[in-house]
Length: 417
Ligand SMILES: [Zn+2]
Image (cartoon, rainbow, N blue to C red; front, side, top):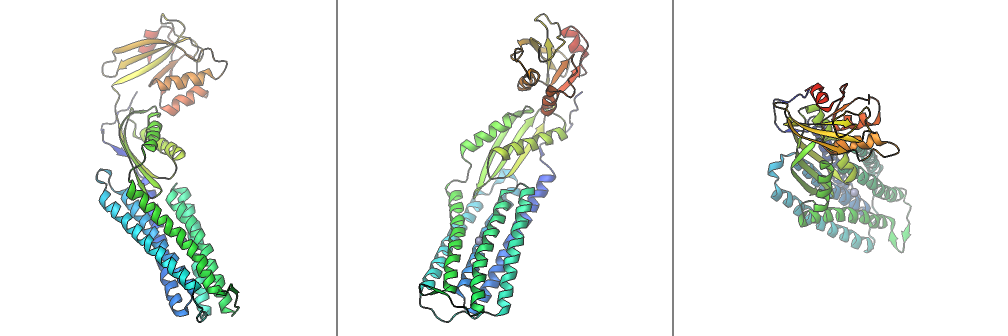
């Protein structure tokens, strides 16, 4: 009745997830290329036009290119095999991002100083510059939407954050575009003696400061503590343990990359069915994502283990071994531990049904209780098909068999093995 896998190797959550990680990585690489491209184009236009606002825009894009690079590093690291986390390399990456963040603050400070300094020539804007900057805004806007879409589909908080950031960039780019547009039409507006080009630069510095701060605080967070806090790990452990098919958590580790969290675990499941095991590991993953924020990736290695014992539950009418006609209402349950190898009884106990007196939904309560007792097989006289308890059992991988016998020992013998 149980199909044991001949190969007790560790199975990683296959196919779909590694595909998705590749996809997430690809979008992160696009983000980097777009940001570095925008930074280059803006730098060129800034130099030729002499616009302080465009200079600020160039620094903004350069900052974003650096943070995209950090994201790529984190994702790349998550793909590597777990046993050899290159923690050293990982920290160097964060040291670099902290140093770059400090440079960014200096650059921002320079822009602010420049903004308040005496006005020189207004920037010389051509229609071509306007066109290039507009294309930049459009690309940023479209890419932001794309990143969010892929991020939602792959459940990647990193990509969703990346997309949101691009949307913020659209706003700062529009500020630059507006000031450039006004300059193009020779409309001169001054606020407290500050020309519009400098004013726009000052506004963009706020965006730069924000991005720089994120880079700095994420980098510092990792440098100060690369591991996940014990509270989060305990939560994750509890989620995995609550899965009835999981018999053992061999190890569980976690790592932070900025605000994002990478988890890896190795569990033993009491099933020989790989498909079932994969389904369970997916369920565990989605539960973790539901309860713990900013989970970027969960890698679950599982070892399907052939059962040594089989726990059988049968509803009893009394303590002498008379099988009950009912399931939820049965006053007692027998739980029999059978050796799979020779079919011998290892242990047998009769327990009072703790939910027999419930006014309603007792069937489901009883099923849940039996699942918690790590029962593998349930024999019933009542046909449970399409009823609540059947779904509870199916969900937990517990087999349900209809029995005809009145005596406990005969009923156990009649069950398929
Ligand atoms: Zn930005």
